[in-house]
Amino acid sequence: MTTKVLRAAACHASPIFLSASRTTQKATTLIQKATSNKANLVIFPETYISAFPIWSAIRAPTENHDLFKRMVDQSIYIDGPEIDALRTTAQRCNAMISIGISEKARYSSATLWNSNVLIGSNGDILNHHRKLQPTFFEKLTWSAGDGYGLKVVDTEFGKIGGLICGENTNPLARFALMAQGEQIHISTWPAVWPTRALQADNITGKARNYDNVAANRTRAAAHCFEAKCFGIINAAFLDEQAIDIVAQGASNEASVRQTLQLSQRAATMFLDPTGMLMPGFTVDADGKKQETEYLQDREDILYADLDVSECVEGKQYHDVVGGYQRLDIFHLKVDQSRREPARFTEGRRDEESEP
Image (tube, rainbow, N blue to C red):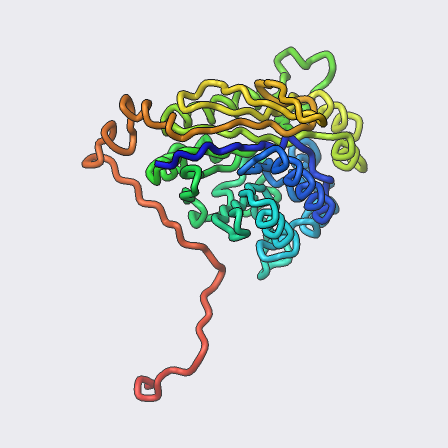
């Protein structure tokens, strides 16, 4: 087992909404800041490049065609210049990067995936995961992914895996990572996830919105307890620019704006291998550390030092992929193949085999 302690840096940050190039530049700046504070792994939220399509939750689908076009335009290719820039930054800063992207396909003008990319400190892509199933209103934007990225990466600091947002509700997806010895689990989330229109007078009543802070922590904590792994919960921050873009042009503009302003903000935090909150710290401009349990209402970077040797003791009690499992009764098969729309072959058949 590794003896190296990982310093993780979770960026509780907003994208430059629907601008892939400017968001990539912001990410690069944050990576440089985090690594100047000795971070070995820098994490960004769900579809950080370049937006989470929150409009689909609170605007009618018939009003969202232009926003979808912008989303397609500002989604990125896995082999595009934005990922290349991040790979170069990872190598230059000698740090791993985990980042959420809205990914587009080369073979379609409008197929998108909610993806996460883990980049190694040498600039290599260590894992490329597409969200297995978009959640609720997300289906209006993203296609279903596949099992190709259901992988745990063995690094010098421990075995790192991750799932995107609602995937952390899927016990089989989580078990697939546990079965690969996951020790550090990254879960990424949007800044808000409204399920109801909100007004100032009903924020505490029956129309209260989805409590995504409690839901996110519950899911991540359950996984940490079951896997005996560390958890990194990384959510985005919602800024006024994003609210303006989403609200403008909606027939119910005032309601959209108010719902976004009143919706509970998601939080960024760390969990230990028992599922308990693990206080992190921020670093100010003078290099002074400030212990912080979580980030929610402001942009910043939350740091924590993770020692995977702490993942051992809990396995004595419940090793759900080993001594606390009945492998003779339960069997899980995971298809990790990448799905493509067609398979093409070139060349002519052997003449002797032709009819």
